[in-house]
Length: 273
Image (cartoon, rainbow, N blue to C red; front, side, top):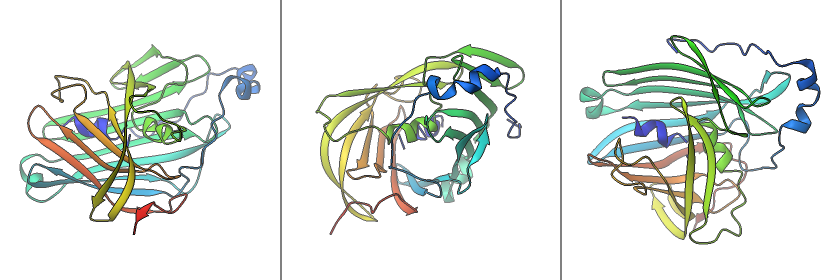
């Protein structure tokens, strides 16, 4: 179920490899001039988001996203270590077992990934892949059975760091129909993720009722999704910009993810009392 991978972008057997820096001292000295600085208060270290996924009538999986409490230093720059997990539940686990793990190390200042690791176990499908990013030279180094370098666009995200970068966007003056584009490197190629703003809407879940901003990400039609706009995303209309619900129609069936638990948000969640 490759859609689980995409879900980890709004809201190998390889160990976490060390980032072998071949950056020159000159590049390190000017990194502040080369890399951007992003002002954000929408998330912080220690944040935990937990989602339940239903596939049709089945309570299919539990997904968690956690920013580790301690920073990790990479290339002399502090990063946030984010771990995303998805695990199938109950009856669904018997006929399609899912046990995925994603990790990214996001620069605390530039909100860009330095390392990304995927461990995917979905039914009979297995994938173990690592990526290191060289944002000074706009390259992604993919480590799987071999090592291959790819040219990427400036300020490229991985599929998990993109989720957090989107939460830094200024949405106060968003116009209906406005499209936000995030350059993302996924499956060894560049993917310009587009997210269209639909408007404001109240959403009721088991956690309560929330004021939300509604978006439609553009997805890849045909492989998993029926149409390009078959995914809908509702994020909290507050300082956190937390995804409250994600719904999508697939080629076969549909899936819904609801936020069911959270910890250590930057601000109180905007619940309607």
